[in-house]
Image 1: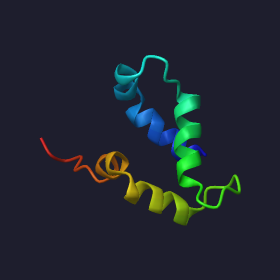
Image 2: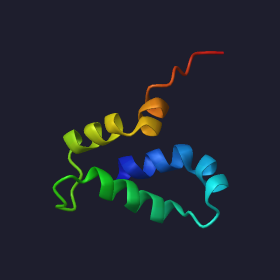
Image 3: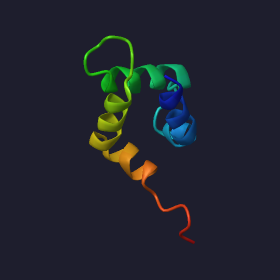
Image 4: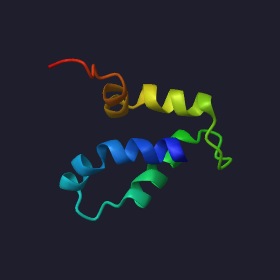
Length: 69
């Protein structure tokens, strides 16, 4: 869950502009639920990676070139 929370913390301010009722807790639970493929309440490394790779927004955020000016 900490990884998903970290992702939310990186994009949270951008998401708030789209939905003023959005909260870190709600968004984290939503992302976690989508990534937890077998619905066991545990997000494995494999589920996390697949979840990030299948979500275009998360994928672009995680693969952004931080060194570009």
